[in-house]
Length: 371
Length: 119
Image 1 (cartoon, rainbow over the protein chains, first blue to last red):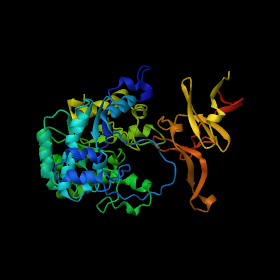
Image 2: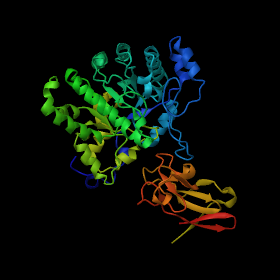
Image 3: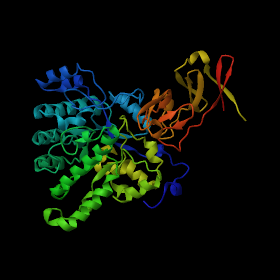
Image 4: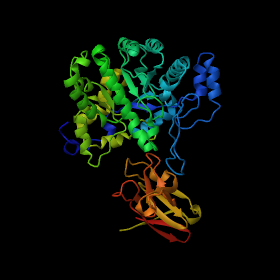
């Protein structure tokens, strides 16, 4: 990543010339649609939930989100959900996205669902609905298999159910309100199944106020406070947990990604853990290398991309965790803080680095189905 | 050399409304704020979002000039970008979050019943 855009961009170099894989796009799973795919008696419950008016990322009964914002008038008036494959494809065409990996809306909160049987049903119904209504409709849309962390055995079965199904390219691990963290041995069955299926896993959080570390965000009075730390703290907590129990050492073939937390936190935790490791290696003898070596083999979604006053600082930031090879462009479309590919394209990365981050790294992570 | 282009008729822009009009390759947002007309680009300098398709409201303010109490100001004068919610004060073009960002204000003329922009 030594060259810069100004030095290497040719006059013909435009976003349209770059193959763009969008590693994180969200689709809207309305409960009435999921009810059609749910096993009894949960279909009855979902139809009941469907009677309640939905707010953005907030569905009573499915997403126990506390909303503390004072509703002053104004703010974004943009529709922030997509409800069909056709609508999504048309938006992605405008964004110049070639292939996209789909994640849910409401099920971002899946780890908070208290009844594990209902959580498993939601994941199963969603995956069936996703496959039939989106992935088979448009082959440029690829799926993330949702698993309920409340029941890892059922999650492993769900991964095996779709193993070899070309429409699914990863396993989604919901991280918001999660307990215990993803380093806990109870999740080993998920990792075993993912490795067996040749599928990577992607951790993805969402802002929430919930009595589970690190989501006790009621300490903050604003979304400015809560949202700024919810995603990166969640990713840091899970990454540290996974390194504590040696997940990347015990599952060396498992590709792991951390989504929607930007990348600013990575150099911090990387250096911090290397420092701790010098003194406390005996506590984590199952790590065969210093933590930063594993961290530089994990993958990362770019969004929400940092916006420093000096844009060149982003290039420096990415150098600190080998972002040229490990970062994957993610728009988060159509959510409130999505990043436009044009914006990423305009950052002062070299041509090679840009091509890798906007597509090739995602192909290494998700596999040839997104090529 | 400047050119004038008709954006709309005055009747099409009642007080408290705004609209986006295409002029050649350019999109211009024209606003009627309590009888005063303003025109700014329909292009957010942040990530090039369609700024003037956003909602118009007021803004929250707080500082030594409000005795550190939160105040609602500029009712009907602030447009919020629908993409990432960056706020702009339409009469001045000033971005609220980024002090060094100020939008170009287009000159407007009323000719007969038409609102014209000078480019």
